[in-house]
Length: 204
Image (cartoon, rainbow, N blue to C red):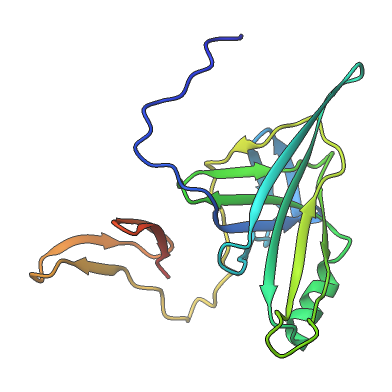
């Protein structure tokens, strides 16, 4: 149903992406819209990029055959290393679902089992010591009829732990007077708003 195209009273609006999660499609048991069920023992992987070098775009194309979209997540990984080269080689050409977490504290699901995102990574050394040495990487779907979905589901990122392993502990946050203002449980994320902008901290 079409309604007025308007926007709420905006108190803050931040561009950029904090981090993202990705999972190979073969590790997904089922998908219904933005509800993702993983196969037993599988988990989401965490991805990050160089600061201010990651962004998401979703281009739309209208034709007589209908509306299609081309979602693309671009980022960069600094410094070419044997360890990163091995990881990126394993991922290259494979299909993924991606959830990105933006700086307005929304999470968005990109891709689906019918139109997943293909991963690719280039490599650039530069031609002088002051040049950047890095991997530009991309998750992209060449064609999909689905827009991104808001994602509020659980994201399991930790591998199953040994029962004898010591558990993570909560983190107590205090103010300058030493008063406890918040106790963050393990696995949670806290949002910090300051005069310099907004940031997020993982509690592990």
